[in-house]
Length: 472
Image (cartoon, rainbow, N blue to C red):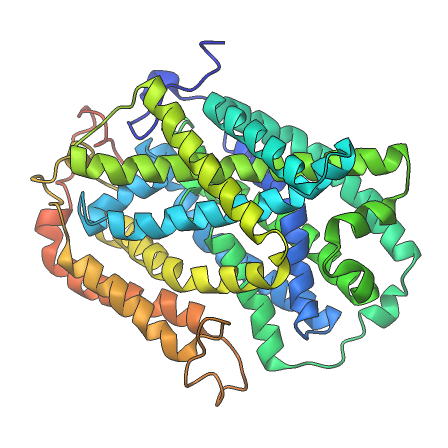
């Protein structure tokens, strides 16, 4: 068991501990996306006004665009051997990275909670113990599996991908048997605002993986092709999410009264009763287990990264590791129990609101890594507030703030609606602004400081963290 339980946290994974192939990213992200929350996300596009044909088109565009950004983050893992958010210190400073980190932690807790609500319903029905007990049992299993770590996460991804794919084939056939697909997918009723809502929903789904996607590619051998890592991550994530969202959109269009607000029971009822129903409840719980472990693991990594920036800590004891994981699990469980009765609307608003804060981070991180630093970071300096990257980077933090503020006029959520949303017919274009504005600004201002931010071109024999660029 000692060889199975992960020892690493935010420290660099040494070459002798690297393993696996880029294809592992496909199986992990396929399994992570073939699950009930992605189904609900697809349904939201129809629930809030899009016709099925245009909902599916918008969801596909958003999955491809957001998935490409997310996969670019994944390609950083084998090169650096580090979890995703610690690389933000190269842009924001060793301590300044706590600003996006705090928001990332909120994201993980929110996704943990929303997933636990749905999985808890399945566990509660399967065990006849009720939703509350189901939520608590599911959260505990999630915490234990997260403590085991990386190898178990990838194994669960493979199992969930296979089992959930078979279940979705069966459920899809049952849905089509009861539905006139031709009538359902007639390309009528195009509305730009709800079409863009569908794009935003799926793009935000993909972009929300960005802050932790490299956590699950960082154990790949250093020579792993960045191109292969990118394409396997993109294909697994887009295939899984679009498949799930398509099912959700069609189900919401075919039986809105039965589906909306009763997602789990509708899906199980669609499949059958008795033993089949029990198996489907188990499949729903398994699909959510994979993604909830990712959220708990990512939350723990982000929390450690934020705290260690002020303690200049590079490693973590097993006891401390367990304590961080338990903290994320407890916080997510509390949110799940408090919000389980108003899930659907709250989740839609949560997704769109999160997008406001993570697109600027993603733009800054990718521009810095690929265009400014040229895939080279000074690894030891990432833990030294007096080193190359400093404690706080005012330029990056200012650009990040501008990127968030620039989105507000275009933002349409229950929390706030910007003044330009009305003239645009209600369309939400904030995520595009959130990618473009900080990318351009950071590219301009960071180039003036490349002497401090970018380490010199390494010698091929240099130490860990300064190796030559990954071959393509």
